[in-house]
Amino acid sequence: MALSSSYLLITTILVILIFVSFSNAQPTSSSRPQGVVLPVTKDASTLQYVTYMKQRTPLVSESLVINLSGEFQWVDCENGYVSSSNRTLSCSGKECPWISGASCGRPPRPPGFQPCRGFVYLSNQGVFASDVVSVPSFINGSKTGPDVAVKEFVFGCGSTSLLQGLAKGVKGIAGFGPFQVSVPSQFSLALRIPRVFSMCLPSSTEASSKGAIFIGGGPYKMRPGIDLSTSLSYTPFYTSLVGPNFTSGYYIQVKSINIGGKKVPVVSDNTTFDSLGFMKLTSISTLIPYTVLPSSVYKPFISIFIEKAKAMNIASVAPVAPFGACFNSRNIFITHTGGLVPEINFVLHAEKVAWRISGSNSMVKVSDTVSCLGFVDGGEFANLVIGGHQLEDNLLEFNLAKKRLGFTSTLPRQTACSLFMLGEKFLAAT
Ligand SMILES: *[C@@H]1O[C@H](CO)[C@@H](O)[C@H](O)[C@H]1NC(C)=O
Ligand SMILES: *[C@@H]1O[C@H](CO)[C@@H](O)[C@H](O)[C@H]1NC(C)=O
Ligand SMILES: *[C@@H]1O[C@H](CO)[C@@H](O)[C@H](O)[C@H]1NC(C)=O
Ligand SMILES: *[C@@H]1O[C@H](CO)[C@@H](O)[C@H](O)[C@H]1NC(C)=O
Ligand SMILES: *[C@@H]1O[C@H](CO)[C@@H](O)[C@H](O)[C@H]1NC(C)=O
Image (cartoon, rainbow, N blue to C red; front, side, top):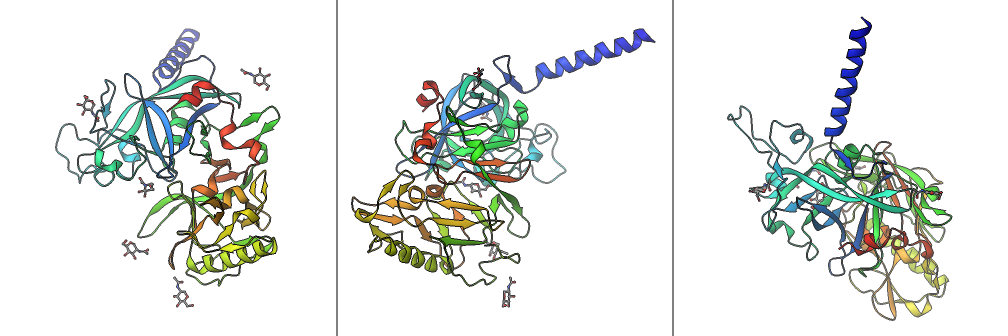
């Protein structure tokens, strides 16, 4: 009896050991890191945000445009994708059903290997595959450690034509959406780290100005004494909308907008507001450069901003497209959070929780003498979409388990997203 139970125990331990050593997570150092960190740059011509990781065997560094709401990562497999470790996913495998964009045709299926296809997203020949990816580990809230590899990272094999419109030189798109096969979900599952990622986008297009995406949660230390995870405000997000036109992404509740303390007057009709009184379908996007507002909100929004700016002796000048309000920048004092202009507040799920937008996130320099309010009119049927310029130098923490968004609002300049001290190797990534 004693013999057979210790035999059982030993077998159990062996099985666990084998399972652990064959599992997908392969940290190259013995200590488990806090998470992983990816560098982020801003492309000057498209204003897209680009991240970097190594993929394939042997490893090749690739740059990918960030799609915050994207479901998965895809890369151009038509042009030069050579790897000894790539594997086409099978329709009968466990991963294919995880991908909403995948298709296997209608059953009954013919016998034999059926590839997991992605017709709509990857063009006609596209299949889903898995391969090795490798990224720097993040240690102690402040530095990079050895690279960690995920062996069977799921991605889409797209065609070269899908790169059209993307930043020059990129190899595909990295999706960070609330999905099972998005980049943060896969790293969290494989490395057994929390389902939390944080995005700190750089405001400069200089190659040396790198922001960061941390997967696995905080702390996020900037310099001795500053941990950005202690300066977060939180608001819930919701992710999917059911109905005929299913879309997924990160949606938040915006109740009202005020500028310099004055509420932007809007007609609360059912085109712009939902039944709970929040602006309908407010989302966050890294693929649009400036926040979009519906016309019914944009018009009063710029007039209140102009009124409040005038009270600060900032003169309006003729607008420069695509912006609707521009100013003489000689009238604007520069402070540690950018130009001293009326502060914009998005009031969120609760009256006391606001996303503050100061000068560096509101104003866009269009010439030596003109700065414009960096928001655009999306037309009558647009929803509020918070875009790139308003996301920069603001740490956004997406907690996928708690469905909660943490944000710092505009960071003071001495703590910009390009000032994490992640080391030279990190800064050299291209
Ligand atoms: C980004 O992701 C969304 C949501 O999955 C998708 O609808 C959109 O087409 C993607 N954009 C690009 C450029 O891939
Ligand atoms: C994997 O690589 C091989 C050899 O380069 C290639 O024939 C195959 O199509 C690739 N598979 C995928 C899914 O990219
Ligand atoms: C982590 O940070 C603490 C305090 O900042 C320090 O004492 C410790 O040595 C650090 N550990 C590593 C592995 O860097
Ligand atoms: C769904 O999309 C179709 C085609 O884009 C559009 O005609 C229709 O009005 C949309 N339905 C809703 C409820 O938004
Ligand atoms: C919006 O309100 C109008 C007038 O009050 C009503 O006729 C319409 O059905 C409402 N639409 C929705 C989608 O609730």
